Length: 202
Image (cartoon, rainbow, N blue to C red; front, side, top):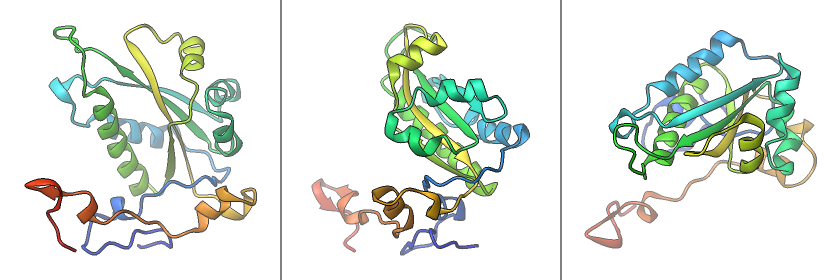
């Protein structure tokens, strides 16, 4: 079922991709542990180079207020403003080297992205929304959670149910929540033969 934030695509794509978006307004409804496990199981089955699965997740929920506040404190202040209303926060960490030979894994961040794609699709299918964030305090994550050398804190995400945009403060945050979703056209992203020679002409 299409929503006001469903993407307007020139070709048909899967609903879990079309309908996924990144709100900042969350309702107070809690996410059950069984549902959260589904999302993380979907992430577990993402593809990764050499099947390394370099992602690690630090999970905090409103059901454990102290743990939630610990995770919240690892976000950039601007993200703390709205993310405090989400029922689930997750901090992501990436392993930097391959287990089988110890060499640097230059695809680790990419593979975390694949896991997040799986998690996002599963969340959308379950009627949840999530917002991923680059704005974290990596050294605070490392300190509070004892993240060892060889791993780097990468991103965070807020997970929950759609809230009311009118609850957001006036300004850019509410404006982004209400505006239409857009993307660059394929001609600016997909090339053939030479750089910036579009594969698709439209």
